[in-house]
Length: 541
Ligand code: SF4
Image 1 (tube, rainbow, N blue to C red):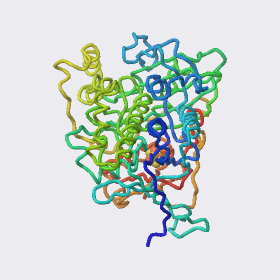
Image 2: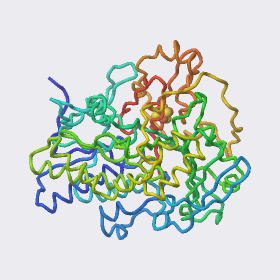
Image 3: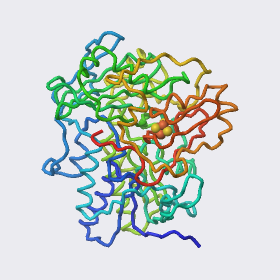
Image 4: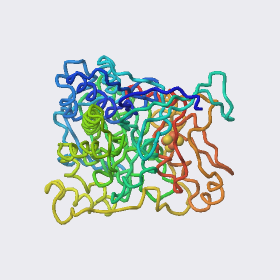
C-alpha cells in the first residue's frame, strides 16, 4: 500500500506563473459566478513563493490582464513604468546604428515590470479569492491511469544524496484531480512526461525551437537610463547564423533590466551563453550605460520560440496545457506573458466547464483548443507563425526580409507557406574545437559565472540526489568528449557542469533555466524537480 497522503481536488494547476495563476483565477471566477463554491482548486508551485523562479524582460502587453482582471490598475499592480520611448539598434563590435523600430517591437501602451513581482501580486489576488497556492510543492510525476491524467505526485522531502532517508523524510503526496492544468513553464518536467506518454500530441508539429535569455539587473547612474525607455538590439556579438538579440528596459529607481537572447540551434559546441552575454556588455553603447553602475541580480531562462506550428496539442483526457509549457510565445514581439495569461484563462474556463458537467474527456476539454483558435492570441501567433522558422531556414539578412514581408502581409504570401522542420535544437552540433576567447572578467562590468550565480540568489539543500539526472553517464566520457568536447560545460549559464576526466555536476548552482535538458546533444540530461523551495531567488527579475 502506498505510504503517500492523497489530496483530492476538482482541478489542480501545476505552476504558479502567469498562466497557472490566470487558470486558477478564471476557474474560481466561474465557480463564484455559477454558485459552485463546492469545487476545489489549488496551485502547486516549486519555489518558496510564487514568482521566485520566474525571469523575463519584461515589457508586458496589458491585454491579458485587461480581460482577466478588469480594473486591475486599481489593485496596486507592480508596474515599473509605462513605455514612453523606444529605440532599435543594429550593433557592430564598435558601433550602434539606429534603425526604425520594426512594427512587432512597438511597445506603446505596454508597461515595464518584473515578472517575479507580477506573479507575486497575482498570487496575492488569487489567495484573496480563496485559492490555495501550495509553495515548495514540486510536482514530480504525472499520474496516468487508463490513458487519462489523474493528477500528480509531489517530490519526496528529506532524501539524502546517497538515497537514504534524512530525519525530515516525508513522502510526497498524491494530488488527484479531475482536471490537471500543466503550466510548468518552458520544458516543464511534467509536460515532458506528458509528451513522452502521449507522443500523438506532437504529431505533424514542427520541432520546438528554443532560445536562452541571460539577464542582469543593474543599478545605474541617476538619470542615465530613464524608467520606461525600451531598447532592443540585434547583431554583435551574435554571428549571422545565430538567432537572437538584446533588450535594455528602464525600471524605477534608476535600475535597468539587461539581457541577451540566443537561439539554441547553434552548431559550435563551445558556444558559451554567459561568455557572449559578458562580451555584449563590453560594447561601447552598453558599457556607457553601465558605467559606475552596480550589478544587483543575475539569472537565465530558456524560451520556447517555435510559435504556432511547434505547439503540441493542448488538451487531452483530464489535462490541459497553457503558457510556456504549451509554447505560447510570440518571438517576433519577444513576449509571452500576455499569451500565458490568455491561455491560462481559457484553460481555466474549459476546466471549469468540464468539471461542472462531470465530463473531463478529451472531447469535452477540446473546447479549450476551439476557444484558443477563436481568440486574439491565436490570431497574433498565426500572423507570425513562420517567424522563427525563417531564421532557422535562412541566414539573418534573408530571414529579416522574409519577416518584413510576413509582417506586411500578416503572415500570408508565397514566403509563408508553412516552413517545416523536424530537427530538434540539440541536433547538428559540430566537432570539438578550442573555445573562443571571452572578455576578461573584471568584477565590475563582467563577472565569472560563479559570481553571477551568487547574484541569482540560488540555493538548494546540498544533501539530496542531483536533480540533473544524466540517464547514461558513460556517454559523457566514451562518446561526448570525442564527438563534441562536452558542450554542457559551456552552455550552462551557471557553471553547473565541469569536465576533466569525468563529469562533475554542481547541482546546487542550477538556476533552473532548462538549457541542459534542451541542448544536450544526446538528449540524456533529464531535469527533474529538486526538493521544494530549492532554486534561484529571482527577486525583481
Ligand atoms: Fe540551466 Fe541546466 Fe545549468 Fe541548471 S544545470 S542552470 S537547468 S543549464
